[in-house]
Length: 294
Image (cartoon, rainbow, N blue to C red; front, side, top):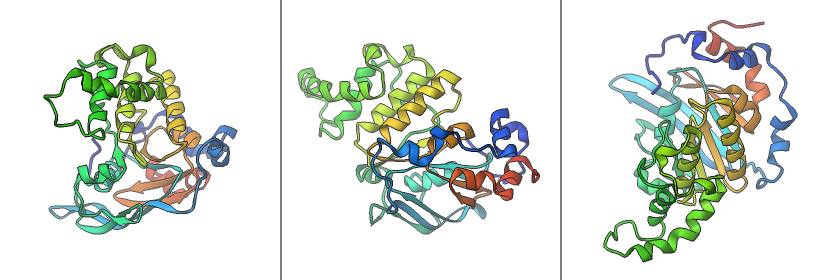
């Protein structure tokens, strides 16, 4: 979990590659060109699918999020970045209604969801993942996805139904498993999977709800290079017909994947725009490294 004390963050909180990206303002590689990445995905539009206006969250006098106004356009991959303690996870919790804002409004697909409960928001098509993998460790990959499918299939509370009824979900479950490249592992328990494949399984279970928008909280956290590449490719594929908002510390991943970037610092929006624009902003450099770099 990220801190909320608003203290300055030492540069050790960020990997060397991330610091080099900010310090040198490297040009985007061709594969990170938003137009390049949009090929094969649904057309990126200027219409917001999710917007927050004046979003504020206070905890007994401490302002964790202050007057955040955020717009995520339909069909984009949008990153929310910032130093530890910037308020990123709190914003995620507000958008998905795990927290109710002190002030402000949240609109999703044209509907005010500010006062809805988390389950209601998920049923509207706004679904999130968490920093810690949330799968059933001793169920197989197939069973994990099949459990996730029981809610949209109307079987979530019908525990007395036969196994044969649940097997009717196998076809769709295998489609989702294949979509995240886990078909060879369908009969393994989640505990037998590598960390990266567990995160892929979690994404498959969220896709079972057929979301219009997927919120990913640090999907690359704790991963090695191979797993990062695998999950990056997966996010590209699932973003072909849905919107993605992600919190991510790995700035190379952000540069490679995202159409738009919003930078938070101490609970407020510091910058918003293309990766090129925000990485060149002196305020962003100062927030990440404690001093403005020439």
